[in-house]
Image (tube, rainbow, N blue to C red):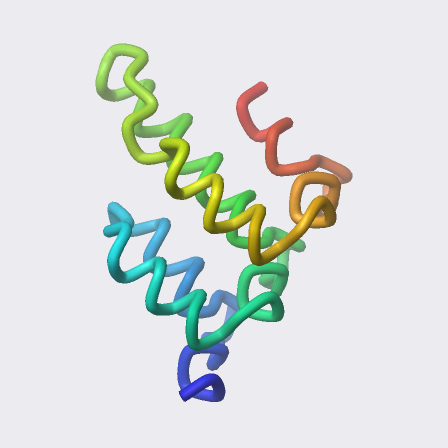
Length: 105
């Protein structure tokens, strides 16, 4: 259940962080968020990254290697994260003071 999906590794990354870092599948993300809820979405790792920070960073890297295509961060993923993480997920800063959207710069 919730305890399992919220379990973290030595770097503080949870299952949602891992899913985004490894070519996220919408069905898996949906199920993880369904089980882990708002807490899972907003949870940060040791660097202060929430799930949207990770998703944005991976999208930037993906676009770099795939000639500008941001395919890993589509509207469906954003809707899931913002519906369950609220406005806070957009404004939450990491340990370097960056919001998730600032990961694109």
